[in-house]
Length: 67
Image 1 (cartoon, rainbow, N blue to C red):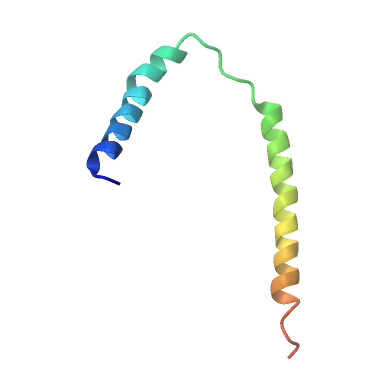
Image 2 (image 1 turned 120 degrees about the horizontal axis):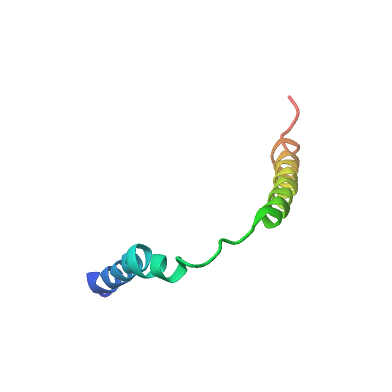
């Protein structure tokens, strides 16, 4: 960073959008229906987490020498 000015500009812009411009922009809009998107996302995360546990078990515990 060249100084505090760029980060302060980003921070002020972010706060302005979150507190003022954003709420005015979306006040008359309907919320998105994300129920099915979240169901698919959660299912993918369950499969991915199961695969990761399997890989850690194979790479971590299966490679240990027997006692």
